[in-house]
Length: 264
Ligand SMILES: [Zn+2]
Image (tube, rainbow, N blue to C red; front, side):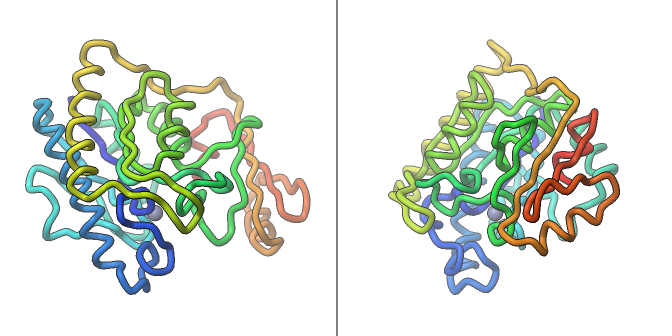
């Protein structure tokens, strides 16, 4: 089994603040990268425990969340901004069998979700796909699902785990903190978070071998509705060809392939 690991920072135990930790000008940003990388390494250890040797870590946090020097030697790192063109990234995704997520946060608007947001924490009110609210977990599950990769494991904040479970029946999740609000949470200790991630991802791989979860595919055609906090963001989005302006803050994108709409 070849594993593609999508990583983020806001769902890592101990990383509780956008301004102090998750934003690149945060006072404790470098320390937060170490916390994230240690959780990623715990996931890599768990994969190795399960006999997985081909592991690609995608640094999915805005300005980068992986501390390169301390990344586990068994992992390769896909990183850099801007992200590669989808055409090139798609070739890489197609080499893998399953997708897993580490360090994940809930979608924008989840009341208790620590650092809840969807893509851009300063501009996006919500995304709805075919009328259903989705966040970054849904985006990954559906995009990778279109390539035949099931999402089999997620670690992060408790609301993110609930969000993943609502999307993917049978997914294994590990909650490393319980959000109390957008800026507060109860975190497990770092060693305990890492212990649970290592054991959880191993169990997810073993379960996938016994009783496979299918890739997540919703029936098309697809309508992605994006609502922004401010009208200028909607103005910019509406300037792309084929984008429908719904109201002053909302646009809709249409497509027959989910991959054509979900990251536009
Ligand atoms: Zn992030």
